[in-house]
Image 1 (tube, rainbow, N blue to C red):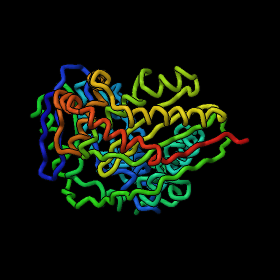
Image 2: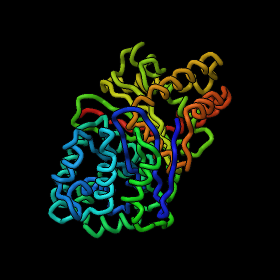
Image 3: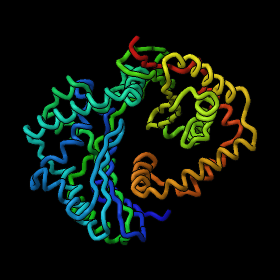
Length: 409
């Protein structure tokens, strides 16, 4: 896909992707997330993401929310362990309006105390709601287990205590330390010329003071393998297996993405879905996941089932993992896996807001964006020997930690 990048003098990058559609999509990605918080500030990055919609130097909360919604546009945001993202979808004439609003909420929010107090209550409700969803909460608890003692293990939402103690000084200090201008990308996919985007981008972002501090992140250490169980007031058992895995920059990243998709990725034809759900009817939901991060990664297998079926499910899962370790894929099997994965990636291009966010992240992570042909070539280059090596390293039962939530007896 055609794209252009323009870097402003302060380091902020403008990513331009031309399109012929009537709907445009834009995002501003900041290379800053929950892993950049101190232990006492857990939940701060997510808290700020909420607060920027509350009041700016010239807008009230209602004015912020209505600025795009009044013209039928959609505005939203989210926080991850490593990023903060604000994004919008809108009709083509409203590019200027959108980028001006991004500027206002990210760089001119005022964080009034009364709004901070209200938003703390909202987030505490969000934490309580999240804890009521064991299939979601178990992932956070598992990451805390796997990355114990490291910021990557902490819940993005924070805790009741940490959120309650967050102050305006915490907010301003975090922004000053982590909102680095050379780690910000403003990306737009729409029917505009590069010169138009640069003109608007320069108008709203050219005068932002450069903030080029060196980002300080510590890679997690490898914790011992652990197995833990907890009883919860739930009706079904939930289990997550997993380990640390390859980072964004590891040469085996593409191979593990392919292997994960084959094992328990998207679609009903994954190995785990066919063998555990379809063949034995044990688990309604079973999936695997691989999330590469800047200096590590996370590989998981999740399933939910009746408590008396957990041991049987684990036995069957380990059987499939052993097959992948001990019996290398045939060339035919490997090619089928590649064709499926490539097709899914190609179809994913239809989600244009997801596409522009992905491209912006790639620019932050790699300082470049691979086109589809390059991505497909990387997938096609994965060999049977590499898949076998990855399988033996990542899928070894003795290297997998486990966490299970059981219903109360």
